[in-house]
Amino acid sequence: DDDDEDDAFISDTQLQEHSDPNSYSWALICLGMVKLALNNVRNFFPVAGLEFADLPVTSPLGNAVIKTLENWQQLLQAKMEQFEGPPPNYINTYPSDFSAAGGPAILRHKAMLEPENTPFKSRHYSTYPVKRLWHFLAKQEILQDTFIRFIFTKKRKQSESVEDHVDQVKQNCIAEHRGGNKVETEMGYPGRKAKIIHKDSDAIMAFAINKANSNEMVLASTHDVQELDVSAILAAQPYTWIGEDSDRESRSSDDLEHRSTVSSSQASTTHFGSSQLSTSSSMPWLGSGQTSTGATVLIKRNLNNVKRMTSHPAHRYYLTGAQDGSVRMFEWNRPQQVICFRQAGNARVTRLHFNSQGNKLGVADGEGFLSLWQVNQTGSNPKPYLSWQCHSKAAGDFAFVTSSSLITTAGQSNDSRNVCLWDTLISPHNSLVHGFVCHDNGATVLQYAPKQQLLISGGRKGFVCIFDIRQRQLLHTFQAHDSAIKALALDSSEDYFTTGSSEGNMKVWRLTGHGLIHSFTNEHAKQSIFRNIGAGVVQLEIRPANRIFSCGADGTLKTRVLPDYFNTPAGIFDIL
Image (cartoon, rainbow, N blue to C red; front, side):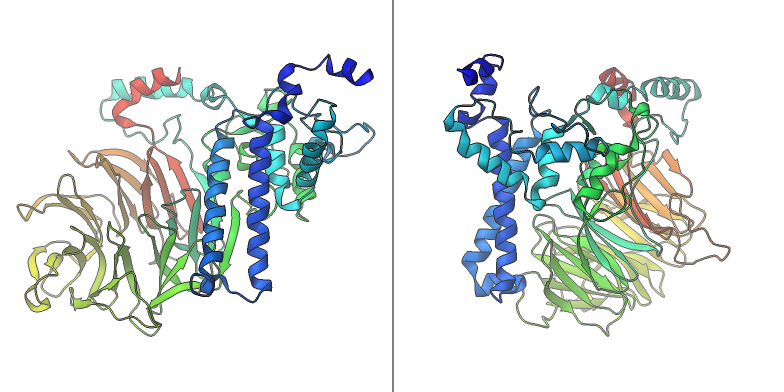
């Protein structure tokens, strides 16, 4: 009959798509069903009068259901990400009515909603249920971004992402070879330019990265705290519309018109340039809830003047420390706080950290005190199990040397012992193991390198000091900046560390030899005719693959990937 004649022109794989449980279509359907179920469950609890913050107590089973669905969603999302894109000739890219007006993205959206436009090509009656299920899911607003992403886009090949940079890599490496210890400030790959994750009119004072999901970040400005999904910005492989010409420069901004179909926001006019890939070109299907840089706002919290943040080393929690002295713990994607460890009205929080196991936390304050809490606290106002004044004027930073028994602190003391080592198993009056006389006017930041058992500290006059914990000796000191060092970060392999100054400059140094590797001038300089004492780089964090995150007084949260200084020639051949 006619159906059999139509099926004769379709491949066997397409004809069996509906009956193959491992097919691309069924993987996408499973992801859509789980996302929809999770959204419905989350919407149900407030209607039933249950607060998310109270779920572990009021409904342990309901809380377990949400956790299970979230875990399923992550697994199914990871499964979909393993595909390079949909199979060839997956569904019709444009609607059957060619007279329909709109840009390519709007036309794709219309095509996706057509009842007959599904990946299940067979006309056998056994395909009818799955076709109805597909059409039902495609119409759900909460799923449209997901369906457009996996139906109409594919991963851009790595060769396309790096080909524009290869020549510059060669030239820089040749120049470096000839020039000896040349500072790699403008390498042509991949850290040549920083990506802006978030831009605010006020200074961004702190941020934290979710250790359980590195695509989620939280940042603090003077007026609020925002949780962001930054997967679009951090995408290792940018995505491109299926069927588009490979020449990125010729692409039209009409590709971004899908934004207007998802939300009421104005359609973006960003162009696909070869010199820099915008977030929209990395993931062009994203629309609703995006910031101007492409990050998706998950939650906004009405918390003012949060100055410090840190995330739990293993779980979905983070701490905030404010100018008013309060310390609160939150769980990502949950509207209510988990617990308030420290009430407002205390000295301002200058630094807070979890220990490596995540069962203890410490808080340093502007009066020189360091306080320690057990994380698994209950009650409205838990008390610290240990608190003592480690510096007479102010405590700037601290680090756990062991799980919690040995702690190093950096601050300002009248006796100039501005970097100290403490043993918390001894009474506070006798707990000082050693005090290093260093850093005129005080130490501001501190990092501990456990593999080499070294301490790295930065001070108000721009000097860096490196100490040997075992020998309790100052090994080396040098001036890294002309102004105070406000931020310090160490990479996990302990090959290099980064410093950020109050002038807004960032520098990268070798830990061994202390040579300068990279220098980024005015990375977070505040543009003002008045000098702001609190200006400059406020926080730095180094993540795997040489990715650096930074924020500062210019109101930006940025990320950049550093070239691998130690393996640059090999890196070129890898790219080629």
